Amino acid sequence: EFRSGIEIAYQFRNKMRAGVALFHLSNGGISSDNPGTEALVFSVCIPIMGN
Image (cartoon, rainbow, N blue to C red; front, top):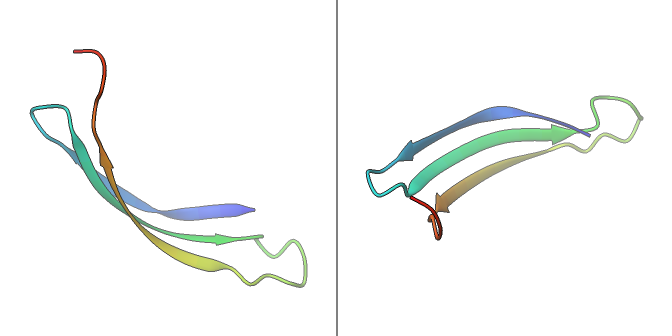
């Protein structure tokens, strides 16, 4: 399984991060059945420990 894509994120002053990613997932043509798929992912990271 192979993944290729792009991701961007922003870190706020309070160390929280928000991001978005777009990627393609497939078997890279290793077998004849290669459905592949695309995904759009949104993320929010909230620090719960540390400085």
